[in-house]
Length: 302
Image 1 (cartoon, rainbow, N blue to C red):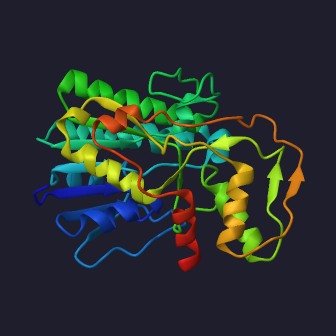
Image 2 (spheres, rainbow, N blue to C red; image 1 turned 90 degrees about the vertical axis):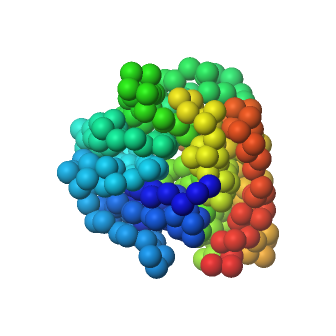
């Protein structure tokens, strides 16, 4: 990839900070962040940090200066979206539309939109492919799906080169403990580190698709580079389902703990099984590299 100017919105957050680290060696990186994220990772030397909002005029000005936009900034708290749907809508829908509208006036090479597996709602079949029905269960899921629809419409109507990513359960040592998608890993880690038993709701046989942030970054690189990614939606997962019981076991192994697991009543509304079909991402050359064992061992080294 030749050197480009890349705008990363939410570049201080979990995913944005790893993207910044990866792309900044060969490109000019501008990070736009409103500094509300609990992650707040330091930007590397040479990266331009602009403190501002994706809904504001500075976002428009920055899009006009860039070749590639990677849009990770979002209101990601599902519970907050239930309590404040308007706040969620303004951030996730209007913020995204502000960026897309600015991008329409430029010769942007790529606009990568971060969506979420939350757009699918209850699992009707597994593995979940990109054609699975989308019936979000929260305003957050609706706002992410709406952002997708706007991005894809801007491709169809205005020929904007967009690509959409639907990540499943991303994890990394920089993750936000309050994010429900990575929350179970963080909670298990905190319990085991404190010498307490991990708490599992239900029988622990419910499954999820946990993907390392390093694999997410690999896939984003492919979306930026490959023209066949334009105008399409891609699941980002490993294609492997891991039970919550197995996750607890791996976390305990990482920290040499052998405390018994604590089981509590299942939570209402918890999806039983979730795993991504990543055939579409594989057509771009994507292969997940980081096993859950390796990925969680990285936490112990932090």
